[in-house]
Length: 418
Image 1 (tube, one colour):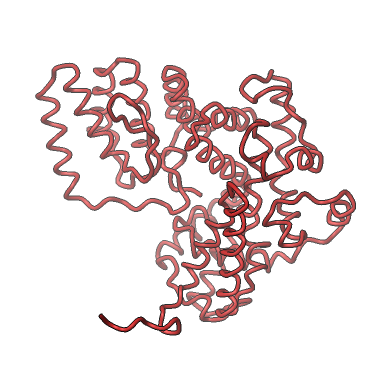
Image 2 (image 1 turned 45 degrees about the horizontal axis):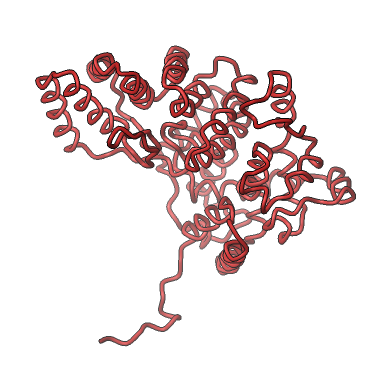
């Protein structure tokens, strides 16, 4: 037996690995006191390790990761009173601070006027929570402690941190955990360009930026796209609420809280009528509750230009199969394969049927799952010839490498995002 390696010989985690751990730890909601203590210890340790690379871990949390640090508080604003979040977050006080109306009933049972009032009040919450993360004592942030009235009044008068600081830390985060460049801010794209071409490091040491960034040709193409269409930057800023809703919806779906997940996108659709992504996500979240309503929403999303055709078609086929329309599902899948296929289909969360039960499954390739669903549909209607054709396609697809998914994307809940 060989000798045990000393701790000094153990490989040191990279900046990218440390920030990924920090990202996961901040977004994770502790279930009990022991869980909470472990979370705090992990974040504290990562901060210390980041210091070895010349990175101020606390500033990274405050200015680059505020959405992650505050996601549990944001979720709590949608949570029913018996939700697990109410056991660790003072929901009543936070609603008072953020001026969120207290729901008179579970979200799915509220009337139109009350839903509209809550939806409107939630629009400024991401900005307010950013302000809280930027100014509150770090221990309070890590335990979701709401501020006193005096603290809140004082923070609202403070000048925000300089844009250069915020942009720098957001760039460091995005180059570490966000692979798809359409989710990067324009400032991050520009800072990456300067680093790749001029080795300007700004707030960070060269060691902090030693990990390779995005491919230069892709970086240049995205910068050019933003320059030609500057409105994309404004859209990306507006999308931040969408991404937070998406992350919250995933957590609800995983926990079987389908009505709560659906309600999130009901809210968003009120503010963004006819938005293709919102319609697709609303349909996806509605599927466990009503396949017929989900199908209508998914068809509407496709008509309005939902970008990932493979995801949308697969979701529609799931609805058709659930509605005992296997033949229609097979025809829709066939039409996609012959006329609508895309070369950049993403992976992510999908509903996958197993023994007549639909299960939410992560990191699935939509086209592969579509093939399996089509084979089952063909056999259900006695078309073994069509099943054989789809089996041939499965063999052909296996020879092609699977496209990578965005690390922060959620496939069916909007692939290629955050």
